[in-house]
Every structure is written in C-alpha cells, then in structure tokens.
Amino acid sequence: MFNVDKDSLLPIYYQIEEGLKSLISSGELQPGEVIPSERELCDRYDVSRMTVRQAINNLVNEGYLVRKRGKGTFVGMAKIEQGLKGLTSFTEDMKVRGMNPTSILLDFREIKATPALSTKLNIHENEWLIEMQRIRLADDIPMAYESVYLPKELVPDLTKEIASKSLYDYIEKEKKLSITHADQTLEAAVAKEKEAGILQIKEGAPVLLIERTTYLETGKPLEFVRSFYRGDRYKFKIELVRS
Ligand code: GLP
Image 1 (tube, rainbow, N blue to C red):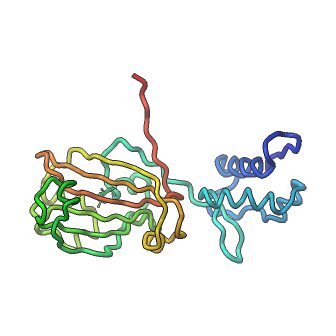
Image 2: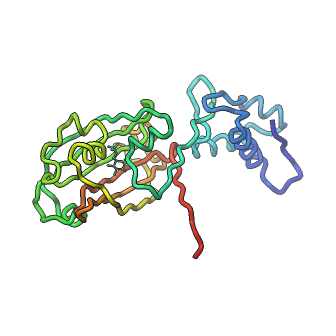
Image 3: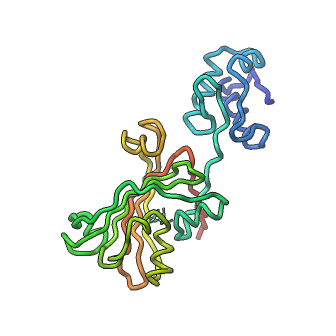
C-alpha cells in the first residue's frame, strides 16, 4: 500500500488519491481489480469516511476508478493514449493496440449541404452529401461517436455495409483515392443526453470534441467529421519541439 503523512501540508484526501493512483500506475492494482473498501481504507489510515470518499470520488470522476452498484469500486481501464501527429483511421488506431474495432451505424442518408457544411467541404450549398452517424467501438466498448459528411460525388457507391467498416480502407483500397492530410481541432466538452446515451457515460461527463476535415491528394476535402471521444478512455499526446 502507500503511506499517509498526517503532518504534511497536503490534504489527506489528496494523499490517498495520489497513493491509489501510484498503485494503479505501478500495476499493483490492475484494471478491473476491486480496490479496498472505504471502510478498509478508513481503518488502515485512521481517517474519516468523508475523506476517503472524497479521494475516491475524484478518482471516479477522472476515470481511474469505476463504481459498480452493490459490487464495489474497481480500477478503470487504462486510457488509450493517442498520438496527434499521424493521419490515421479509427480502425488502424485500435488494431495497433491489439483491439478489435467495430462500428454501429446509427444513421446513413443523403442530405443537401448546409451553408456551414459547404464551407467546411469547400463545395456549393445544396450539393449532395452523405451523412453517416457511427458509434465506434473497441472490443465492444463504445469509444467515440462520429458524424461524418462526405461529398456524394466522391463516393457515389458508398453503402451502409461499407459505412459499417473502415471508411479509409474503402477510399484507399476500393476507390484508389489518396488521402494526404487533414485539419483537426480538439476541444473539451461535456456529454449531452444524446452523446451520453450512445457512449454509455453519464450526462455531463467529460468528452473530447474532435473536428477533422480530411483532404485528398487533389486538394479536395473528402470528409468533415465531428467526433465525441470518451474523456475517461482517451488521452491525446503530442511531441513539442522547441525551435
Ligand atoms: C477517425 C477520424 C475520422 C475518420 C475515421 C476513419 O475516427 N476521427 O475522421 O473518418 O477515423 O476511420 P475508419 O477507416 O475506421 O472508418
């Protein structure tokens, strides 16, 4: 276990929080493993239930721990660390981690480009787009919820069946189009009722909102995508070089 120093200036709940985090990062507590009960922690460190609860609540909110009603508190799954440099697909991202990527297609339809989408995709207003909404899962756990908009002209034969698999695979291998670059933004957001239901998280839970416009070699935008990634399952990593 870890030590708690009652003479320290650091609050006790914080020391417990950091102690539990260190057990998780050292692997002493494994993902899916139950942690000692609140009572055990109170007795071991001779602290109040409220102090222990505050530490645990913080760790639950940050995704380190998961509470299961009537069963106890468990170590959460380690967050997926995703690089921000390469232009990769969800399928590739999960496969390199040895996870099985799947999709649930929630919606697939043709729509006319709104003014906002026509600007994003550099096309005329009212041009036909294919809109698809997909839940992206890794080993059957929902990771992200994506709304994708593609100019129909580029993918006139896109079907629901294709949309349920890797889009980039289809574009590159079937359509023989070359995807070259993308503009992407990442911002903090909270899950509204719809996203929370889809991602199986609580309403108000943190999510990462990612918007990507992906371009083909020809310079034409291929897709505009708005995705919500689960804040408890993802962290993004980027290398910074000082010039
Ligand atoms: C990521 C990107 C999307 C892209 C998708 C393609 O999820 N955020 O912009 O459309 O990858 O993934 P796949 O080829 O698995 O369909």
